[in-house]
Image 1: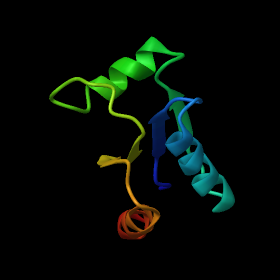
Image 2 (image 1 turned 45 degrees about the vertical axis):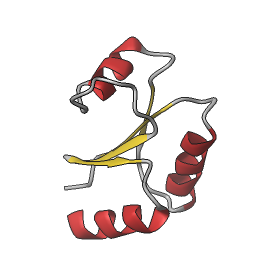
Image 3 (image 1 turned 90 degrees about the horizontal axis):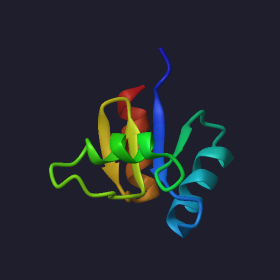
Image 4 (image 1 turned 30 degrees about the vertical axis):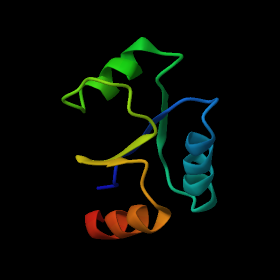
Length: 82
């Protein structure tokens, strides 16, 4: 079964753009969920945090949540969760 990757972020955010490029250059399937354009995506992101803030960019790898991770951390978790 394939790893489900979600990127919660905003188009205007340079860090979000970095992660989009990261996934695309590695040809990894991911879902981009724009929390500024879609209230359902914003609510889904809020539900991941006790403080209910829009902490973006946040990446989920199945159930693993990464808040603004380094590329090496994403690599490590993708390998671990395969």
